Length: 335
Image (cartoon, rainbow, N blue to C red; front, side, top):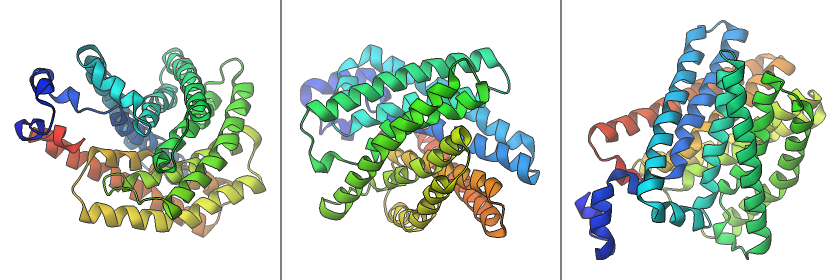
């Protein structure tokens, strides 16, 4: 850590040495819990559809909960001892979007816990719902009142969309009072904000400066609205031609996007930011799994299974690289 600290202002070095690892820890670390939630949902569906062992999905769900608790404790510690670093994240026009990972992880855990305890799951759902709505309004105000630059428009902007459209996932399971109206409201937010943001991201990718290698894996976030949008819309209004168009557009985009991301991963050193690709990959895989149940065919079933295995392999790879760095006490270098 000493070599890394040398590039930091001298006045801050002593404080960082005292604080330790949490100074470098990012709020985006909650993406790891999101990824495991996605695996939990995917393997639960695999159990129902293809007879996969039930314990696989539940094991991944338990991992998601453990990761959420550990990351929450560590980041809360950072909030107490290094509030300036947290403020710096919040005031950064790109990093502020990653605060959405905490919000989304909270709601997703409601769906993970729903089969076990309705009351506890409802607490997570209502808490996540409240935080997501407040965060979405804050971001909307930031976009409307503060002048934005095209180079700050990254796939992370979609986290503002991803938050609301994940709310019905657990809401439709828990069926708490008002969940149907809340689901309609959240789908509306996703449609109104998602389409222009995706267009802006494409404009940046085509006409703006290329994303850094460390940020390239975040391109997978582009896939999340297609998968989560399909699940949320079809389970709120029923599958129709619009949802079929949505998921097929995602299928068209998936292969060039994943080819780009895998190319960067093969030729770049591992970064914790790569976890940003975990949940979007599983979200899209889960969307295709639901599509295969609504439109049963050999190709939809085969694609659903392929994407589930791919997403699981990717997250297990990210887990191995993270655990290896943690064991060698070099995790702080990866942020």
